[in-house]
Length: 478
Image (cartoon, rainbow, N blue to C red; front, side, top):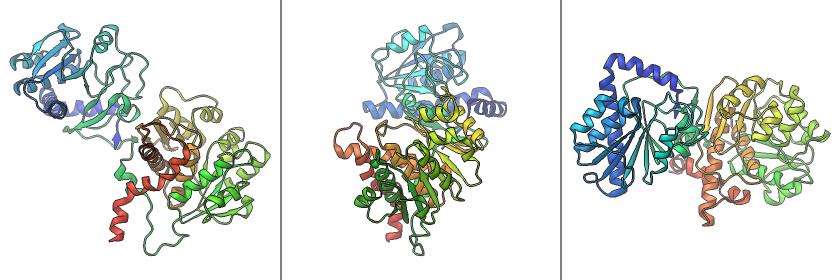
């Protein structure tokens, strides 16, 4: 699911316009938009003819797309009204086509079955202007946005003032960053195919199919060692639960073996007797990846533990207290093996000296390159960047994992994927996807439709893994 910055898309569009012509490109895009609008009308009202659609039309190309789409709908018997925000700058050919097809110009937005947001396009930045904001505030119908919800930055997903909140966003040629970074404002995103080529993207998201294909599944020749041995150093006398949650997530992620080292040994074994548990990290034995930090503390003992795991030649995931420690001792990150850090915004600030900016992708990219690590920035939308500038996003579907202990689960889950051989970028993104899915399943199971604590999420991690990998397991079973 690649997403391209708007400058890249606009360049590709300009080249295609030179080949196919601006008018033909607009009609193709608007016909795709009209097709989606007709399908939405049918799904929501049971029909198309006789329904009402209002177009909010700005002065740019998005307004032209909306007007041409309105013309196509009017020919199918839809009552189409165009509200022109800048009448003397409305797209002339699109407006003429709408009027020829039986559409009209008006001022009323109430009573529509659908409203089309064609106010501003990809080149616009900043919140809606007062007149547009006042108009949008009157809307009570589902909104279909053209390319990107107006008032939301298409490259960063940031909305710092009045903006459109869409039920559906129809975009052309490929996803833009906003569709991944602010899925809440975009709603469901539909891509209309266009005749232009885009270069490889540096930003994207893993689909559920992608995650399923990445998730390790044991084969006939595998044993507990070949499936990945993950070591967990977590918990303390103050926070024994961190040890249980982090280790439990690693077990549930279908690791071949989990080794635990720390003061939470007895609590871990009481819950997960299959874990090989010791008191000291030096006695843990050989692993293929380490997870360190949740509930560990930040004192001299924690520093010694981190020196041990970071001196190893295997991938290391650092979370929670470990991030605080390496923020004070950045030299610990100078190692040849891969390192993955999973901070929330506060830990990010302690690590880098400043909080993430509104452009969270740029902040994570810069920090990853500077520190020479892979970074997973937690949040409603999870952002993972490697030091080469590649970014994978896990779009927000719920905030139901914003509870105590949820980060411990994510660490164990991703650590198991690192031990199985996934690179840090894909391990982090795949783990984040399954983490959110487990929270959704736990909420459904609880019947509350509300946030749930970490323990029920742990109980549903295996079901989440089964959901993304069920096809492969079923093939193997047969």
